[in-house]
Amino acid sequence: MSVFMRTGYILPGVALALALLTSCGDTDEAISPVPRPVESVEFDCMVSDGIDSSAHTITCSRPKNADGTVKVTSFEFAESYSAYVVVGDDLDDPELDWDLPVEKDAKIPVPDSGSFAFAILDGKDRVVEVWTVVFIPDETSSSSKKSSSSSAKSKSSSSAKKDSSSSAESESSSSEESSSSSAKTESSSSGKSSSSSSKSESSSSVKKDSSSSAKPESSSSSKKSSSSSAKPESSSSEKSSSSSSTPETSSSEESSSSSSLESSSSSEIVPVESSSSSEPVLGVLLRDFNVDGGSVTVDGNKVYVEVPYGTNLKTLRVQPMDTVANLERPVEMAFVDDLGVLGAYTVVAGMQLPGTHFDARDNTGFWATTSDAMANSVTEASIKISSHANLEFSSSRMTISTKEVVGSWIGIEGSWKMAGGFYFAGTYSGTSAIDIYQQDYSSGTPSTGASNISKDMTFGKSFTARPTGFDVTYSYSHENNSNSSYPQKGLIYVMLVSSNGKVVASGVVTDESSVGMHQVHVNLVYGSDSGILNAGYAVKEGLSVGTGDEDVASIHVMFASSAYAFVVAGGTLGNDDKYRGGENSKLVVDEFKLVY
Image 1 (cartoon, rainbow, N blue to C red):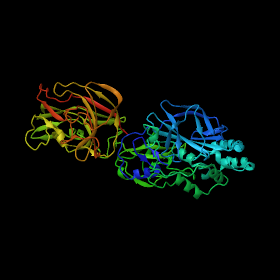
Image 2: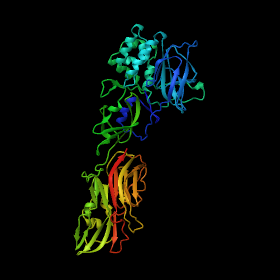
Image 3: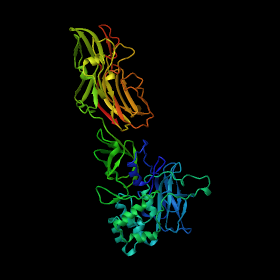
Image 4: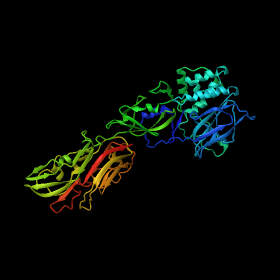
């Protein structure tokens, strides 16, 4: 069985899913769920309980029409969908009879094989589902009803539903006993009473364009043979009858499962067992998928794996495959859900940054601050440089504020500068207030000139994940300054940076007036710096905008109470128009979370 993906390539079941795990999958495209186009379908030959929607199988009695056809009495499907009879036995890459549409009042010839299939096409003539109609002899139709009803009660997690034709073809004297046995015993022989039915079941979850499904210009050029798909077994009723009378052994079961999932590349699929059941399934159960040391969350067709910060995303051990996977980028895989449907999922791995609940100051070394230097007063040549710490944690919130740095001579204040509060991913080499007042001070009387303390900041921490955005809960208290070139405002930014200094993605939040505690979501834009590099903020030197496709090597995060007050500027009494920050402006951060 092949699973056809919407992104234009074929994913051969779990075999290729496992191969993708050990390679570096490179797509951010989300996979949309396959639509369910069929709303109702009826033929004039259908027996009671003769339709299995999950297996895409219809059971009919032998046609009584003199011309050997069955009539479609009702066929309703979603808008823009259509259906055509399949030519031949290949249900993975079906060849269609464009002259024989399946629609209300249409008459379909019944082949000698005792079954036929029809394909459902979407508005672009792409095959999305294949159904099989199987015929049984009239004299055993009552037995078929019992078998079909009993079989419907017992669901297999591998989608290998028992075909009602299997139990119907057993001897009439033991039909009820065979029906009871069919409900209790999950044998692969009943699952393959018709290989056409089995193939349609296992390929029902995801179908993709095939070379034969594109509508031709004329019917003469419409019938294309499929050379890439593995040929299915014969779907004759006689084979179904012989297989239903005696359950096969477990080894036969595995052989049947492996054969029915054989891909166009002839790779063999081995059934995987559920952790909660010894019953083999045709693929990895979604509920069993996990990563050592991580947690798994499923949202539609996205599987998010969160691991602790610092985990190597290139060497994640995944279960139950027991193999090493590279999940630095999203990877597309196939899983079997709880209904037994094999589908396509996008697996995304990520992590949160340490200390972002802000219940206490981070002690891992991930974050840096200028606050420690602000709190460390220094006296040089009878001139004292002093300020106060401007970072605190309380009630699971971080508060950073903008403070003055004061220079005084023999206790007489004579010079003031303004420094913002900074909490950022990286390191800070300054150790005292003099490093704030005058960056890289060596000797002599401290000057009143501007001091660029970002030169003592090292930006960025190791990081390789690819989040789509971030959520931040914060408030901001605005205090005006008089510098019109550098107006006071709060700042939060995130940049993902490659190893060669390219900004892979970025997002920014700024405020020029006070806001109460609230949460905002910011999308990270790949292939953009969001204007951060040219805004005059404190950033690493030498960065440039990338394409967005580069590998991520580090993450840069900045929280600042005053966006421009990393350049500590001021003057003498009455001359504070150079200040790049508003004294006592505050940024309070409650929580920060990366979104994947």
